[in-house]
Image (cartoon, rainbow, N blue to C red; front, top):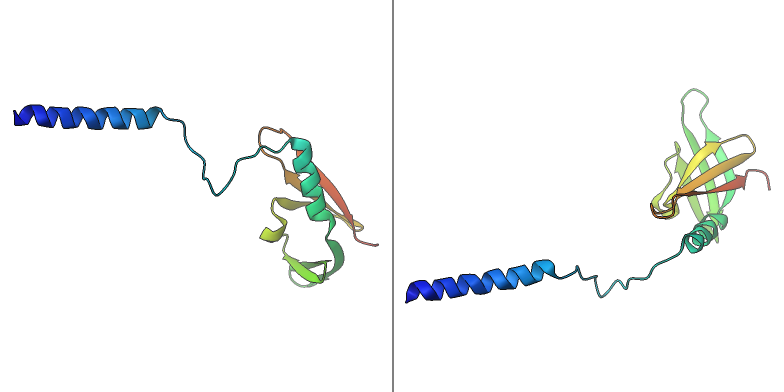
Length: 123
C-alpha cells in the first residue's frame, strides 16, 4: 500500500515538472517586452551620442596617456586612454583623427549592422 502511495507521489512530481518544462519561458512582469525596430534603435543611438560635444584633449608627451573631454547639458565626461564610460554604451571610438572622432555602435544581431557618427573637434 505504501509503495503505491510513493509511486503516486512520484508520478505527480513527474507530471508537474514535465508540464513546467514544456511551458514557454515567462518574461519579467516588471520589465515589459516590446520590440524595437532597427531604424528606431539607430535613431535612439544617434540621439544619445549627438548631445555630447568635444571640449578638449589632454596628452602627455613622454607617456602614451590621453584624456578626451566631452560635455552635455552641464555634465562633463572624461574618456581616458580610449576607455569609453558606461554612460555612452554601446558606443566606442572607432578612430580619433586630427579634426574628428568617429564613433561606432553595434546594433543587436538581428539588425546585422552598425551605426557610425562623426564628432567634429572644431565647432
